[in-house]
Length: 115
Length: 110
Image (tube, rainbow over all chains, first blue to last red; front, top):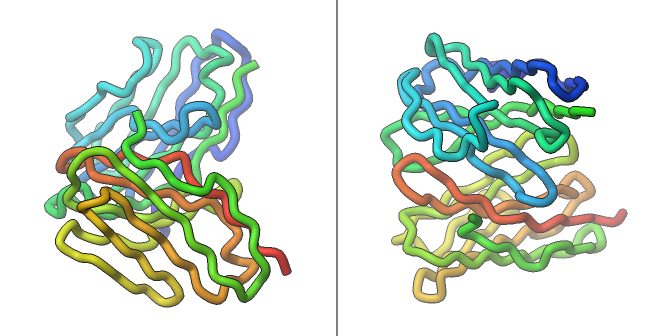
């Protein structure tokens, strides 16, 4: 298995622009997570999907952030409009449900820089 | 907010030495996990220990859990340069959510 795939790996954009991050979870995993990692705040859970349905979006910082999971093999995280404080590394992770909060498999991340 | 806190924040050791890092948490858990993150990469799961377990081994890794003290330790024996990374503990908040600590940065000197 190729593991969790994320694209792009790096994104540099100007303030005000729309940014879309993409994720392909591991086949057969029914749980998908979007995280943000910064030096100041560490690793934060933004949103959790189970069987393509958003279950917990309490970590989404503002209405500028939105996430979708149209099918079991694809998810997007969109920021519109982007701001410099959104600069961070964004990770997607997937796991199998049924084991509680068990092992999560992380993608390589997207490093976002908003200037 | 972070449930788990690692200690120390940073650790520098000679190749071949053992590395020990600790994690303390606040609320009751079902399991505790340790992850490794190499520079510029995603987190990699190392080991999961359940609340009814006291010790677990995986290769050169040894994890202990003391639920009475709400603490866990990760021991890496016979360290190698490839062990240079940040190590995070994660505790389960509910049946899907993990809370990650700030991490311990380990540097293994050749």
